[in-house]
Image (cartoon, rainbow, N blue to C red; front, side):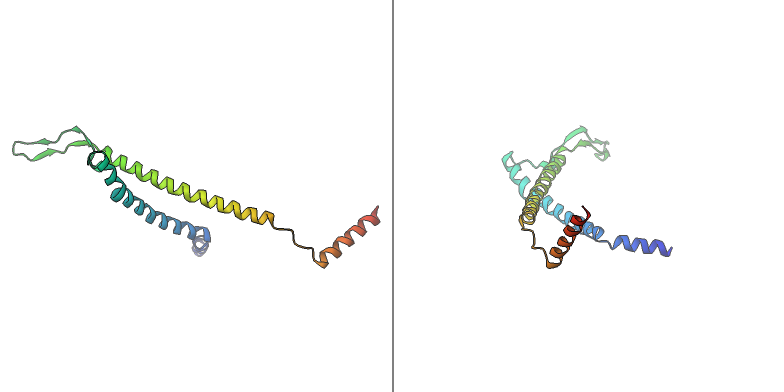
Length: 144
């Protein structure tokens, strides 16, 4: 049991697991922000442009509700709620767009860093390196 706990501790405290946990937490918060952006800012504007309809309320009744003689609902209506699906598609598109933009700029930044590293001049050889190179060359010439 002690080996199991030790292995788990090593796994849990590795940088990748912690980085992943941070990413999941930030991703959840980002998802809430995007959902709020869609629900509270974008969809009301879209609803205004489409004649004041609320997308989350869009649905088609597949089977109407059934009431008894007293007016009590015996069977609930069966509806096809496609409005929430449209809203979730808009959420997905915005999240995908944000991730695409972030990755695009990250890749550009990484390429610039690689170019700077490639363009850096080779450092001058130290005295020791020069001396070792001369010794190597002398040994090579003596073998021939």
